[in-house]
Amino acid sequence: MSRSVWKGPFVEESLIKKAEKQKTDPKKIPIKTWSRKSTIIPEFVGVSFLIYNGKKFIPVTISEDMVGHKLGEFSPTRTFFGHTPADKKAAAVKTETTDGKK
Image 1 (cartoon, rainbow, N blue to C red):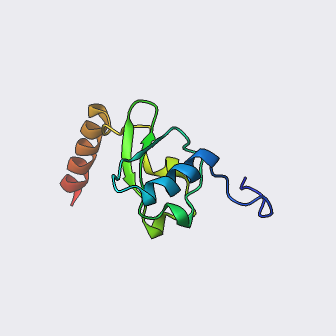
Image 2: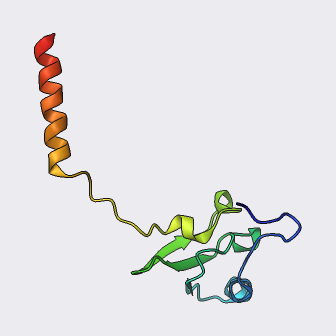
């Protein structure tokens, strides 16, 4: 369920302050954050973040296309290693049997 329109987007207050500070700072040190639930607002465009995914910090630079999404969408928490070898073997056998009938 989405957030009520009258409440507006949720953004951590500390992130807004840090983003404003980074825009004026000549050193572009990325902002480290654990707030994956914060919504990306237009003031964040051009700001770089280090978003925690539960194991490590993922570097993300905000672009205009990301506005309206959540920070957590850009730092996946799960790693896909592929399907199990049994699934690959079953798929190979299935294609052999279909090729043999032709």
